[in-house]
Length: 189
Image (cartoon, rainbow, N blue to C red; front, side, top):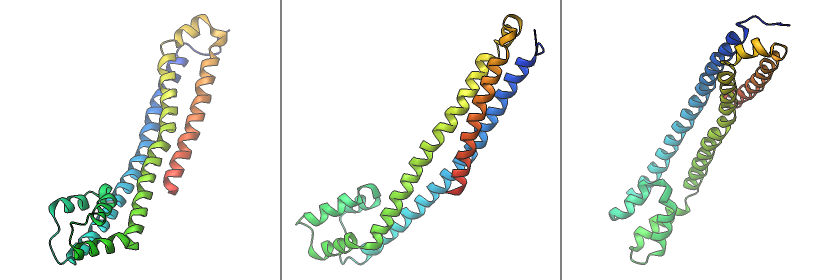
C-alpha cells in the first residue's frame, strides 16, 4: 500500500535540503555579527593598551631602544618584555623605573584581563557554532543521500517509505532546536 505519491520523496528531501542551507546562512549571520563585535572590541582594547604604553614611554627621559619598542607593539609578548627589561641590569635606572611603573600599573592589568576575556569569548563563539553547523550539515547530507533513493523507497519498499522521512524530520527538529539555542545565546551575549 502506497501512502505517498511518486514525487513526495523528491519534493520533501529537496525542500529539506534548501531549508537547511538557508538555516546555515541564518545562523552564520548571527555568528559573523557577534564575531565582528568581539574583534572590534579587541581592536579597541588593543588601542587602549597601546595608548597607555605610549603614555608611559612619553614620560621616560631617554629614548627607548628599538628592540624594546618592538616588544611593546606586540601585545602578546609585552609581559615577557617587561620582565626581561626589569631583569636586565644594562638598562638605565630612569628607564627601568618607568618600566616598573608600567608593569605595576593596575589599569594595564585590568586592560589585559579584559583583552584575555575577549579572546576567550572569541574562542567560545567558534566552539559554540560548531554543533549547530554540524547538525545542519548532518541533515543536509542525509537529504542528499536520501534524495536519489526516494524513488527506490517508493517503488520497492513502499511500506517503509515513511521511515527515512520521519527520521529526517526528527533530525531536522533536533538541528533546528540547536540552531535556535545558538541564536539566542549569541543575542544574549
